[in-house]
Length: 253
Length: 266
Image 1 (tube, rainbow over the protein chains, first blue to last red):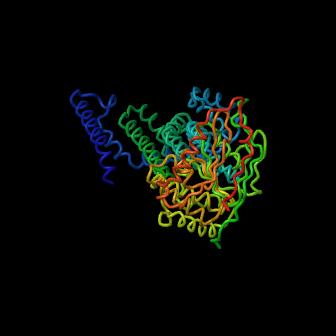
Image 2: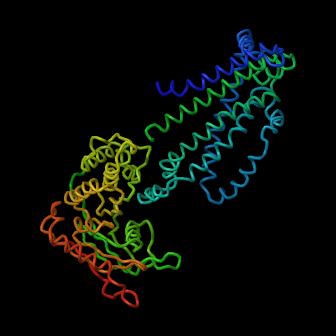
Image 3: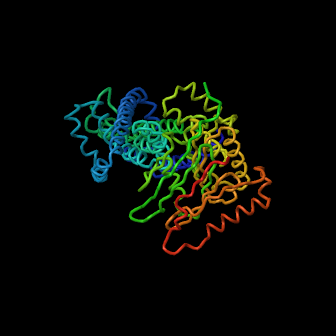
């Protein structure tokens, strides 16, 4: 606990200083609220719209968490399949490298055709954007098994599937957790972009839609409030994945 | 129930075993007969093929020519780096071979704890590898190699990464385990003192290409640590050292080196 406080206070203090500077600057330069709202105005917008924003938060969280969960399962399975065969790996590796250059969010509008308007498209968008780092890190982890330990398993006559379960997979856990950490941030981005194209306004508008509709009404304070809540989803997911990683790797180091 | 008795020892016979890597002869044909229950040390300069010979005996690699016969038994093996799984505690590392052989969890645990006690690690059964010193890790590695009560134990420079004091305690442990369990032991080492102190026979190899130069029977007045200061010990070291540094005979291998036999002490 002491260590947590020790490492947390400098960034928190810096954030406080920056927020204070922002507030002062807006006030001193008389910047108009629709251009740049002061942090206090964003806070007020959050409190005043707590009810509808919390429903938006719920929808976006559902899309991001669901997308990340699908990415975790699909990514680990696909990564395992790719890593299991040398030929498949050699075939898939250049494709995976090229796929990283593809702006995946650009296909988000297409998702509406497949999944319709609403949370399903946002969830699919989150899953598609976040699955690749999970696949890449799973493959790396599974292929980096210590050859000495592989030899040990060979000495004791372990077959392929036993070696995978009891050696390669536990060995790859740190890599998979790293992939999931990267994916947790991407899942929120994917969810919001998905909502941009597939969400509808109204009482049940997800955060992405809140950003768009508030912008149209020049409610920049609400835009910032929605962005802050989106960041909160990202932080929470990252924290949850890190905690899971800590649990899985307890005692190793 | 865990079996506390001695292991049935297996002999190991190498018949014309040679190894060629990518057209380069790693060592010339080796014929050696290790009697059941023997403790044989193999010494030699780096690159003489002693570790390769051991890995062939373990079935990890196939020789280019010749055969190794262990009577169908699977040997236990311990490496320079004990190769523990970092996500498993000592007990679960030791019982890995039993787990892979499909033995029930209850029996695994009994046999694992018993083996850990034999190597002096009974109290540390739930410690993770990172919490163990180099010597303790080697003890766990030894326990794992012996948990199946193999008829033969192959040791690949088990002490070379340890400090002097730890090395000595591990040597004592090896001597005790051999006496208690009675399995055949083949120890590959580059420490002549270790080879002579532990082995009842010492096989001397030289390099490029590797070959067996001689096999020495070691007869010491005692096997207490103090024996290292006796004349007999020094003489044994001296004769092995001489064989290791012999000038290479012209035309390759000395024919007499090919069929030396290492037998158990009567």
